[in-house]
Image (tube, rainbow, N blue to C red; front, side, top):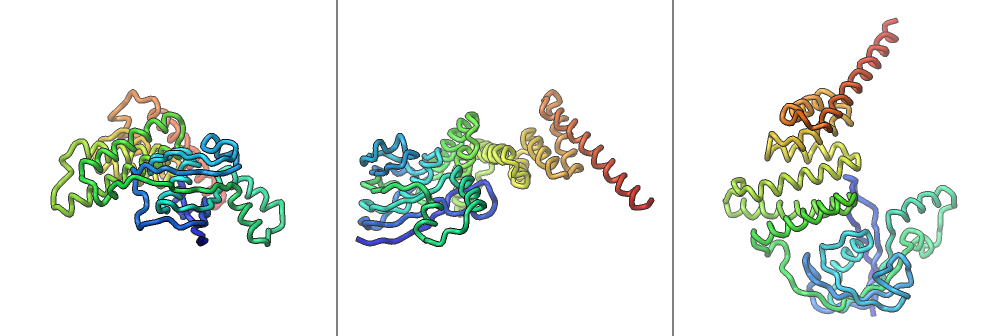
Length: 308
C-alpha cells in the first residue's frame, strides 16, 4: 500500500490557467506501464456516499461502470475521465473534487469566515466531494501519434458532430471541449502531412472541418463573452474562406463588443453585402451605428469640457 497525491487540472474558458478541480491520492498502485488513451473503454468501480455522483453510484455500495476515455460531457464525467487517464490497471485512488457551483459557494464562505488553518479541513472545503475509484481494466488503443490520417479525420468529425448537438442543447462548455478535441486531431493531421511534405489544403473535407471547428469554437466563446478569442478563431476561419459570412459576422460582433468600431464596421458591412437578408447582421449594424453615435457624443462632450 502506498499513498501519492496528484493535483490535476481541467479545461476552462479562461485563457489563463484554471485552478485544480480534483485531488487524487493513490491508495493501491496498479500494474504495468500503460495508461488509458483516448478512445479506450474502461471498466471502473466507484464507491461513494456523495449524492452528486448519482446515478453513477447508488446508495454508497460499489458500482462498476463503463467509461470511454474522451467521451465525457457532464462536469462529473469529465473529472472522472481526467482521473482515469492517469491510472494503471488495478490502481485504486481516493478522488476529491469540486464542481463549478462549489466554487461560487466557496468564494462566499471565504468572505464570511476566517481562513481555515487545518490542512485537512481546508482540503475538504476546496474539494468537498469524494469517491474511491478503481480502474479494473481498459482496452488497449493506439495513441493519437499512432493513428492513420483517415482515423484522425474520423475522430475529429465525431467530436465536431457531438459538439454541435451539445451546443444546440445550450451546453456551451461541453460543446467547446468537443470542438477543441476535434481541433487537436486537425492540428495533428497538419503535422503529419507537413512531415510527409504533402499538401492537405486541397482536401475539401479537411478544409471544411477545420473551418467549422474554428467557427463553432468562436460561437461558444461569443456566448461566454471571450471576445478576443472569438476574433482569433474567426480570423483563422477567414484564412480558409475569406467570404465566410458567419466568420465575418461573429468577428464583427466581437469587435463591436471590444469597441473596435472601425474594424467591426468593415466585417459587418462585408457580411451584409454577402448576405443582405440576414436579420442578425442588420441588427448588429444598427447596434454599431448607435454605439458609434454614443461614442462620438461622449468624445465631443469631453473635448468641449477640455477647451471650455
